[in-house]
Length: 393
Image (tube, rainbow, N blue to C red; front, side, top):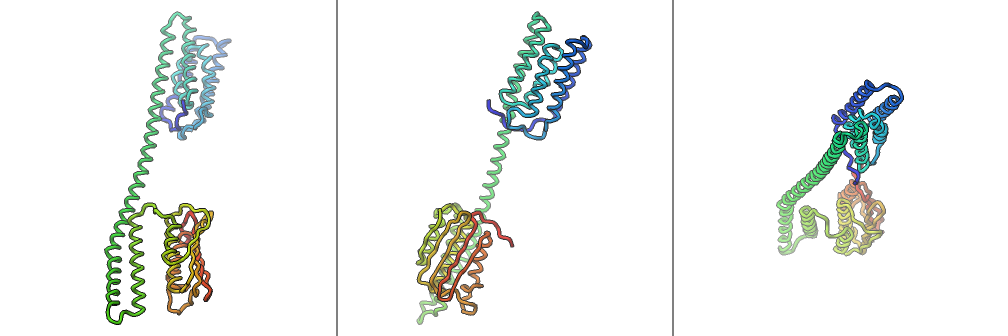
């Protein structure tokens, strides 16, 4: 038989058993010593009775009813009950009057012991009662012996069935609690997905549609005689990129499940679309979605800056898997980041694009560094912990 799972006992039942054992022990001792003198065998009975009662009291005082039973087969309280039983068995054989204590002792054994040892000790209790009654009846009253014996067997079987029912109930409760947690998590995920779908729908019906309309107007302006200016052409290109990126974002919001592509594959695709090279360093592993999104955005912004503002001929993206972090480096051989007042605010060190990249990385507990020299190229390096945490304000 395997060890039973730890569970809380019933304090009221335990208290009744403990008080019952003490009362039965006192009643049995009073009955015995009113009929037998306190000499010879009487002294042995008194010593055994005191030993059994003191051992049981020590076990009861050491029992914490609010604490689940230990996973060990025999606990400190179990040792106390075993010692009390060891005193009580010869006591019952010498003085069958103490057989009445078997009722409380039987339940106490099953309370603090578990597994086969509990049933072995309870069987010893039943046999001790039968032997004591057999001696007192000199073998002339079989019913006096067989009654307690079979009664003890029935009680053991009933207690075993009750114990199995309680164990099954606790297992069912644990399973219900686990199912409830899973259901609550599923409801939260479903609510988050519904909210993402709602926001995606709103963006599609407002931002995407208006951006597409503005792009159509600019393209129509390009068809007029003389064409459009360079500024309008740049605005048209920016709107086209924004429209593509917004639609990609909407697709990610609607399909929020695990991405089919790894972070390396996504960054490689971004680099290829911009004509940049791509390499990886370290052992690839799954990346937290928030980290992956931040590194994708940093790479996208750096590639746009290298193409539009730095006039770089060669750009290389390097994805590095550190033991406790993930990083990406975007290096180009362009003309470097211009200073303030050059008319390229988004590429300036204090421009919005770099501020956005810095915010994305720092919000996950990472850091962003930018090294640039005039006509010497630029390196944008972002590094984010593998387990991102909210950065201090």
